[in-house]
Amino acid sequence: MFNDSLKQLSKRLASREISSVELTTEFLERIRQLNPRYNAFITVDEEKSLAQARHADRKIAAGEMDFLTGIPVAQKDIFCAEGWLTTCGSRMLSNFVSPYDAGVIERFNQTGAVNIGKTNMDEFAMGSSNETSYFGPVRNPWDVAAVPGGSSGGSASAVAARMAPVATGTDTGGSIRQPAALCGISGIKPTYGTVSRYGMIAFASSLDQGGPMAKSAEDLALMLNVMTGFDERDSTSLQREKEDYARDLDKPLSGLRIGLPKEYFAEGMSSDVEKAIAQALDEYRKLGAEMVDVSLPNSPLSIPVYYVLAPAEASSNLSRFDGVRYGYRAQHYQDLAEMYRNTRAEGFGAEVKRRILIGTYVLSHGYYDAYYIKAQKLRRLIAQDFSDAFTRCDVIMGPTAPAVAFDLGEKSSDPIQMYLSDIYTSATNLAGLPGMSIPVGFGDKMRPVGLHIIGDYFSEARMLNIAHQYQLNTDWHLRIPQI
Ligand code: GLN
Image (cartoon, rainbow, N blue to C red; front, side):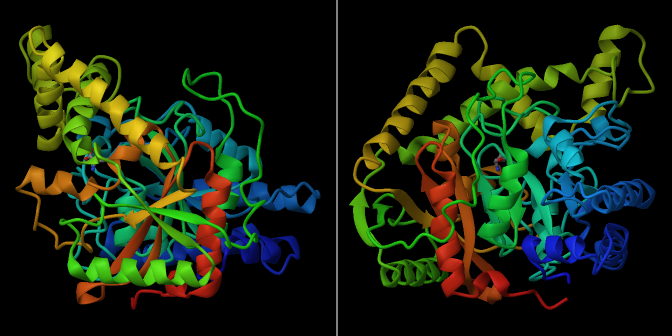
């Protein structure tokens, strides 16, 4: 049952073979057993989850079952959930119990899904390894010596270790796709504005986007059906007609044009990753796809541009954590100014402070034009590169991450090395485009490799179709870590 797809679980619930309470109890038991090793969850509240399961069972008995009714979903601890501790991986919010639900949580509640727990993450979603969490690092189920990736590393680890059938994540520069790749699961960051950011604790608002993490592309489609939709409480939420993301899953791929950017296949990718990606592309050729050479000339600038813009927005967003309204407050201070200083000095970790410093610097008088405005202009050029490429191909493919999962501690003292984990993913956030990662094999030390698929705006259904067809013909997504 732990390996079941959402369709299988939903069928078991609909036929009353199992109840949601039974299903939830099984997953809670598995979390109890495995979480001490992986540290994928920050908060598990069995009573709350079981209360939701009982509610789901009543809905099912009353004939009001939706597709996800009664199914456990692990929620990244960046999503506010009423009555739940919502920490964002930070000491600053280590005592914050949310008084309201995020838009995404509301949607899962309305459909009758069960919140199975809040997953661990890099502090305020800043990181690529989950080592910046105040609640300790997360372990990769494929190898406990390895990081799970970040910042949605808890969600990735939870799904890979089958502690939850599906999970949510957020992606500002790669935080759904890179951990999905490193943990051998599937994940999609939809087009910016598709999933509500209301109640999703803000890191860099113009880049942040929520999305699902799951075992397969089919499960991602079914999750997106619940997660997406207009939310008037999010000023950048898009008003579009509701779509069924599973509608194209079964379409054949003949005639598909896959763009291969020469910049992604130049130096930088490790040879084991290169090999797995080449094999995946061969599989796509067999499925009828044609490869097209494209170029994204400004893509080498995406990391520097990201590390001007994301910290700039973060420095502004994080100014709300001042010890006055909610969250942590320092115990010792003489006056108001010292209370602010001590609260922020004690409440934030080193990486968050580094970002606030960089962000404040690039926004300050005299540097604003040189850094922030310049980065905004380059952001436009990066987006334009993709538009040009999509005149010649339907999707773009490459590696999700330059190498397989690294060891815990291996990069934590070298921020630049850590930042380069997102070298292939951050450009899509800068452009607002959808991107996804699916498992396509194993590299060094039998650690998973992810294939990155980038689509044009609102082409999620097509991307999921492309991923699903691959998964129908291969079994990488069905491989399970020995645990
Ligand atoms: N790793 C990137 C960072 O540290 C992206 C994080 C994210 O997507 N939330 O900022």
